[in-house]
Length: 107
Image (cartoon, rainbow, N blue to C red):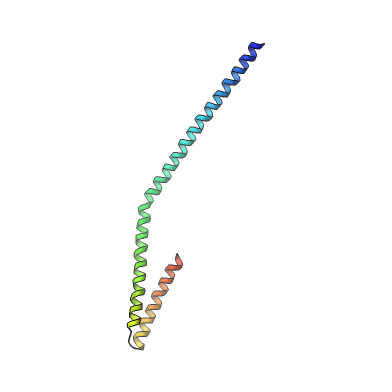
């Protein structure tokens, strides 16, 4: 009878060891898969950086153009001599500042 108890305990211990080993192997595989997914996402991120830089360059060019238009319109409005020139210059200044406000509101 004690022989069967010892065999039963050894079988239970062996099954427990197998289950623990399989759990550890499964955990290792899941960790490797997770790190692989992280590597894929980081590569995608790194591949998108040049696109982001190009968009920012384009936006900076547009913003620079808008700011230049506002400054030029202001200078023209200040330099205007007479009501006719002042009206045209003020209209241009208003249009330029509207573009600037639209740009600011978009952010």
